[in-house]
Image (cartoon, rainbow, N blue to C red; front, side):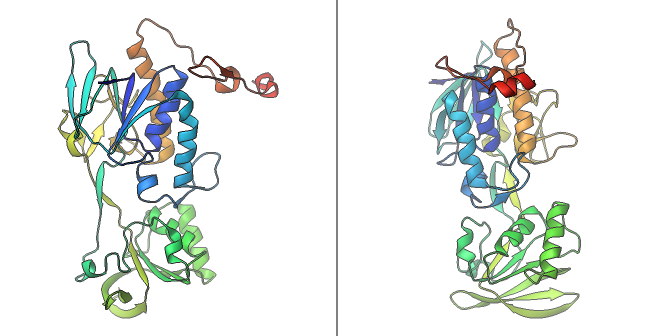
Length: 348
């Protein structure tokens, strides 16, 4: 039996940052993740994808963000159960929970923090007749290594942040990048939309809207595709086709734990991101509430408030006074203290 203060289900960025915030409160964490390594989608799906909305980092690769979060949290010595899926939950008489994985590993904690991101997922695929024929032969739904597309003719389809961001990134290394979207309007960040339009004017991105990829051509590998715009079709040479239409998420076994589910996400109270079951919280992309934004930085905020609430639940007889790390430093479990520079302390 693995015992801890906060059992975190999901070792993505939000789960990893929870370790740090809990550590500041002297709370121990253990993380469960079905993937064989920490980092969630940032490690498994797009480690080389640049992220632009992390405070203090104008641009950071997803994989580098994960490494930084692991480095930040390791001083608090989190435990990990990787390659196993949280399967069953049981509430004990003392109010704590036992969570059992699909491999039978049992974990006991008074607080459960579900930080499972989108849960298990599959890419949404376009309805093209011979799509399966070219999967892994020119068609990819996830970009793991951008270098694969160096000096290639790449066609990206989609209108969200992933399609926009990858069009921008690949314009630097691919021979030709074409972005196809069925509407003139995009769903992504306005800044990314403007960057793509600028790259179009510079001749670095071919922007074709409103249009769709309707057919694929080739023998053993993809050679070309057909694009249909305003009822007229034309063929375009392509080494790679990357449809980025998002993921179809599934909560998996967590959906059967008696939690209030709304649109395949867990409903929470925005006071502390607690679910309808006291002691169980949901943070990051897995939760939903009015005004919810599925951003990593929002997950960090939710994790911070959740840890404050968890502390009160675990130590109802203690009063915690919030301290700024710039003043108090970071107390390690070994009793050491990392003090802030004097100039910083004096400025507070």
